[in-house]
Length: 328
Image (tube, rainbow, N blue to C red):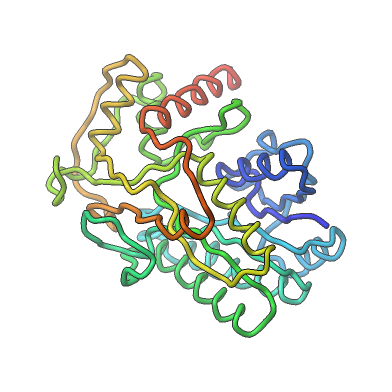
């Protein structure tokens, strides 16, 4: 039996593959390489190039590799882009997840771990949000993920498959052994953009909005190290394997940092005072999104080990320098 990881050549998925392989699991990766990289794939995993929305292909993979568990990362994740091109997000996220679930049910998959998002909460205040906070996504991205959560809950109620959904806050950082990191060149992730500016790969960084209802007027976010996030997935899979009920949990540290905070730490870590431009707000950006992850800590005994912004940015910086050498 093997675990199927969709989007396993992407940023978060590649870290999940490493963790599973390190734990001695048999892993199959399904990725169309639209945003992932074949060189990011761990050699211990079986790679299949294809789309997670292809029911026939997924059914074949499930049967051939005796898949009983799926961890689903494949999808589109850029909030402003989802506002401009919502159909792309309802296709790549909602419709793809629907087809993947159908193949999973037909193939007798027992457990499904889903990559969700804090964007399902929408415009919330500065206080940390818990899982029972009203869901009111402010972007097609958030709505596309919420629809997927709803589908999973309905399917779990009708069939024997259980699911665990993790609502990510802002994921950053890189593998401690330097094996994986955020590698998309034109990403919109704040920390990566700041470090690319520091390394001379971009001329400046834009800060979108300075009059939010936050301590310094810039957006406030909860940044979680990729390794702690992946550990939460491993614990969720273990939880479901024990026969526990389907569940949804937040995954963050409960500490908000402003855009200015992140930029200042990036400058300190890199030792470079780079250019910052303050521009108009972007569509769909809430002022603050900070996690209450008590449920994850209590239920799964999740104990984060990298809860430090400087540590997160330092690991990301090391990965950026690695990419520069690799791409020469």
